[in-house]
Amino acid sequence: MADAIRDTLTVLCEPGQVVEVRALAENGTHSGYFTDYTALARQVEALDADPAVHGCYVTLNVVNPALLSRRANRIKMHLSRGDATTSDADIIRRRWLPIDIDPVRPSGVSATDAEHERAQTKAEEIARWLAGLGFPEPVTGDSGNGAHLLYRIDLANDDAATAVVKGCRATLDLLFSDAEGTVDRANYNAGRIWKLYGTVTRKGDDTTERPHRRSRLLSVPEPVQVVSHERLLALAAQLPHEEPAETPAQKGTAINLRSWLISHGIAIRSEKPYRDGTLFVLEACPFSTAHKAGAYAIQFASGAIHAACHHTSCDSGKQRWQELREKYETVEEKHDRQETRIKGCSKERAKGKVQEENKPFFSPIQPGLSFRLNIP
Image (tube, rainbow, N blue to C red; front, side, top):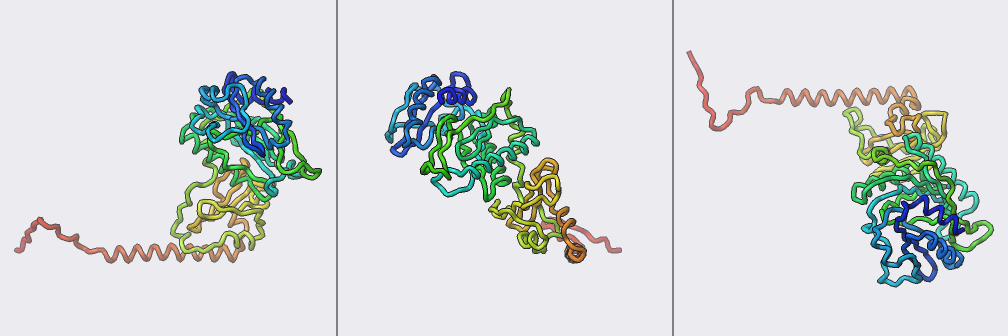
């Protein structure tokens, strides 16, 4: 176990980097700061053997080295209210984009083997999709109940970096979270702690159906490549962030997207709020038979609709609502839509004509201006 912990820290940390280890237990929190990873592994091994410890964690990002003096290469048991742990302000640089996939289950219990496996499968799906966007191979881990993907980044700890990390996680949550597993979108702050691989995850009682498992570092690419800032920005912007502009022909339409999907035989896998509207995750991709999952449709609060698929072969989020309508609507529906468009355009032309006819022939005379009539 100690070797697994040291291997984990070698992957997660820069040489000589100060790292906080934090153990969450039934009777309090235990914490220490380390540059000596051998000492850390030895002390954590003793902590991990305590059944009252639910889990052992470490800081992922680069900690201010001054924090070593809080508890230098030692773990203090049962922190008091006056004992500080790592805050967001204590991080001097962001080193990782962490993605945590957790199976849906009752709170306070471990995952079943089937739930645990589904989380691993979803992590593989996400990693393949990100590879299609140009992301390098991630470090992968098993949290004991779910799956982890870790992408190496190099960002300052500022508001802009927080926004892009938050946006990346939100995009993955909206595209991949469903009734079976979720992408945690909350762990975007710089001071977040992460599972220390090699230690046991304890939630609820250790039963045959829901056993306690030891977390593991699964794979480490050689070398671990850094994701560019541009790719992070592109991921954060994958879903539409503004409502598509409505054309005059679209105004006055009253499509209820949920009803439209159901009436056209397009099964909805799940739905969730999205920017005052609703995002529908579709059971199967209506644009391609090469894959099943990945398609979604959004109805904004204004009624505007965006339909797309997040797979690279389906143009990674490109607007395809009109294509979807053309594929699934009947001849009668298309005719009615054309009539509505013509009426809408006619109303706009008529309105413009009335406005033009009501314009005064002469412009009003401005005060202070004089003119003279030349009458023969």
